[in-house]
Amino acid sequence: MLDIRLFRDQPDWVKAGLTRAGSDPSVVDKVRSLDERVRACKTEAESKKAKINSASKALGKASPEERDSKRAELRLLGDSITELDAQRSVVESELNTLLLEIPNIPDERVPQGKDESDNVIVRTVGDLPKFDFKPKPHWEVGTNLGILDIESGIKLSGSRFYVLKGLGAALQRALISWMLDLHIEKHGYTEIYPPFVVKKECLYGTGQLPKFEDNLYHDIEDDFWLVPTAEVPLTNIHRDEILDNSSVPVNYVAYTPCFRREKMSAGRDVRGIKRGHQFDKIEMVKLCTPDLSNQELDNLLDNAEDVCRGLKLPYRVVLVCTGEKGEFNSMQYDIEMYAPASKGEEGEEWLEVSSCSNFRDYQARRTNLRYRPEPSAKPEFLHTLNGSGLALPRVMIAIMENNQNEDGSITIPEVLRPYMHGRDKITKL
RNA sequence: GGAGAGGUGGCCGAGUGGUCGAUGGCACCUGUCUUGAAAACAGGACACCCGCAAGGGUGCGCAGGUUCGAAUCCUGUCCUCUCCUCCA
Figure (tube, rainbow, N blue to C red):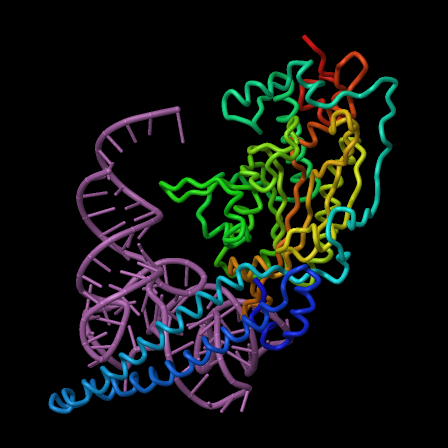
């Protein structure tokens, strides 16, 4: 969430920022008036508390007769404090609810825009494949090879589920291992194996709650929530902690499945494995000091791009516009991989395989994640960043479609071969 | 799931109704001493909120309650540990 001080001290700047983010700037005045009411209640209650505290201390030393007479008076004062506190807590929770839903202020570099068409393509890397035949969509390539079984997924769990079989499952597992190793060995991340269900506090911390509850799977019985991304557990590991200066930056990488209800995209991307309720992802999270977060976003993006370069798959980097980016980050790059046939008869598509974002102190405030700049200095909020490195189904699509051969086989990217017993192709058995 | 014990500051650990935000130790910061460091000694230093400041308020897992007054008493809840039970 945004610093309440910004609303007090620079309301016009916040309004301008929210307008850019496509959000209604009138909340600023709402926040300010709620904040003033909270503070008024607080000030009054606190001065009364001060009175009652000193009177109570005196009463401790007073004679028994004096006590009785004072008691009634103090009780009255106490009742009025209770009243004020009750009032305050109502207003305060209203204020909090509001603050939790107010988006982040976009970085000045974020292009203004409504939708995808306003995103800025930063660079395109790699050559598009040339085919002597008409490339097939992945669901045909995969099904023909017997490595993708959509029917079984539907039978087991319904639409938006699928089964990977044999070398299909092995290919995904190879990708997971190779990507993790790359980030650990080459980019210096620490591998984390987190829980795949979390408490709701974590989801409030990263922003999925309260606003996007619709997209989450929730176990009511134990109040567990399935993670929609490893960003949630990774960013929350140090929630409510004060890290000392020597232990930042923190660089975590994790493999997890991700679970999403996809209520908002009903009917979209239903064909193939592009958008499932369950998918695997490698996620990187950085916690760093405020002065470094711009630089770290570049690093994060480069780490994710390194995966694309290693696989030798064509991709492009997109700077996502105000209307399309996640509302809680301040700036977001997407990496889109080329897939020549993933729209079926309509042909090619650029698939989002990674989103790399800088949240600045927005999530750190929600998670109360701080660090101490100097051994006895005051704690300050860290900056948090996260990025996929990468999302697996879409990389699988890119491999199946870009690396398909006329005979229906798939060429396995070189870097993955050591993870697949030296095999260089997936062919029909 | 059953029985018991416990949750206090960055860490360890005292404290069972009123000068307790909390004794002590470790770690930390400053100074003295030293060529420098260590040691020793002296001092400082929790977090959050309101306030220009002076100052005030809140926080002893969390949420309620009793009381003029709660770390301390009561209720609920969560978590940890030990034993039993069960299990990949």
